[in-house]
Length: 244
Image (cartoon, rainbow, N blue to C red; front, side):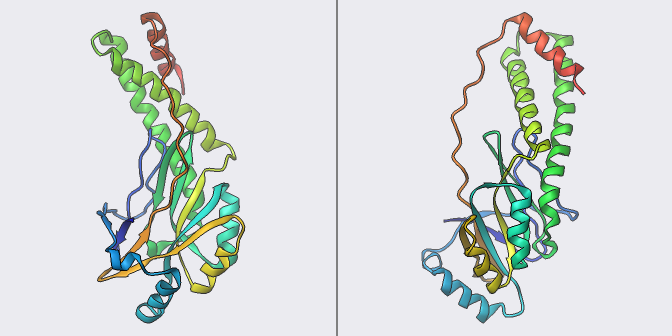
């Protein structure tokens, strides 16, 4: 079982896929190692892990994974969590066939991260567009015949980014899981929701907490468009420069 180790005061950075998914943390962040839970520990049932939290972390909220039955809207996720008092610190997103996540320090867990995940992703997409424009400008000035594959990939990236941005700016559901801090009662309340497929309390390790990662939605196999002629590629690069 793959997990993230979360130590006190450390926030995990999110994925950056095609310049869309983002990191949203007001603090300095540090990437942690992905590791394996020992075979003995991974055999602990959900109820045994709840007992472990009662015994060893009596005054602390439980760190847990909440996986939804399908990709859910921001509002649906907030409603599910708000009723139980659970506060998210990591949001897992899936849009336009790509994965991403946004993370803050668990000590700062808040429903605000759900709105922040979308707005921060839009901001990162817009910054990525500036980088694509700079590269497109260079290709148009210097020519792209020797670096044709890179130039074509650049046009593909921009088309992909625009599709992602359209999803982010719309009210399209993008959240498939969250990691939260909550009470046992709150997590058991969430578990009863028909919109939730899985609730997994974390494992208590020496000086750390291990929370399982969610099972991501299945990606579709996408094929890039056929190669463009020189004239078509030049026009595609010019279009990138003309876009706001």
